[in-house]
Length: 323
Image (cartoon, rainbow, N blue to C red; front, side, top):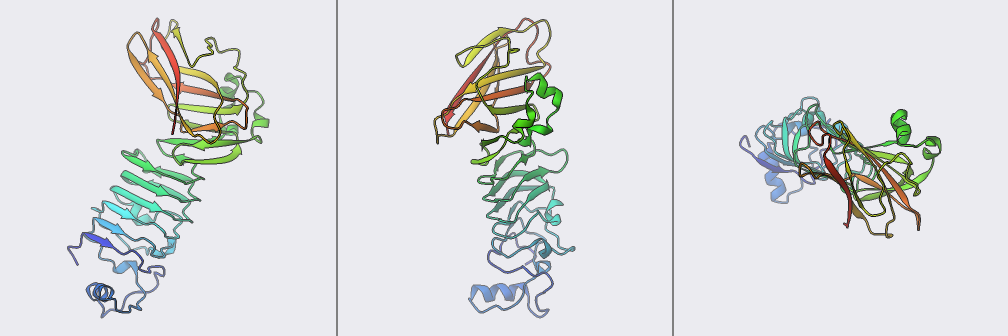
């Protein structure tokens, strides 16, 4: 067992860590009993798992609770694939947080899971159908390098380096005023539908602000564009000349309607025509209009120091497509 690389313990009951296997029963004998379909009545303990060399560990539907992981439980630092699906855990156990890298983390149908915090470097993250999951974060300085699929995690409000959704009352008041929004108190209680493109879910909530490190957006009902927007157009694109300073950020206002029941992708494209450079912004979430009403999208988009300079001709374009 010292050379074991792949171990699928799916369906075994590790739910009570206070029990241990009998001293005269080895893992080899236990596994042979399972293969031979003999009745196995032992209470199993995670401490006896042969984890020293395992690179792939699957513990689906093993009745694992937060208390099922004893303080001395360790996994191999070479662990590459981990599947903890269908277990009543609320958090990622500390023994897995200590890993440096996991190429594939799979957690689906964990109905009690609330957060996935201090994750190691991950290539692929599958967190599907976890209805109470609210936050996904990595160790300081790390970013999701590959794919993340938090599908049908309706309560997910934050996925580090990808998106975060906060109530409008938590956004800096000066920034809100600069957008021309002055009735924030009523927005705190106004219920709207918000579609999250990462979780493929819709929820009704007070007006929320989806944002990333380089931008944030506000969606609210109505069709009035704040008067301080200098360049306006009735078509989904416009062009302008940048003034005598570098473009530090771009504020955009888009008014739209949607066909009921048809989720779409939103793309806001900035094109520096002079430098022939394009930047694409795809918001993590967007507001869904009710009935025949309009929805207003205000976007604040931070720019790097070399994106656009004085005298550059630039343009913005709004593109949508069906999901």
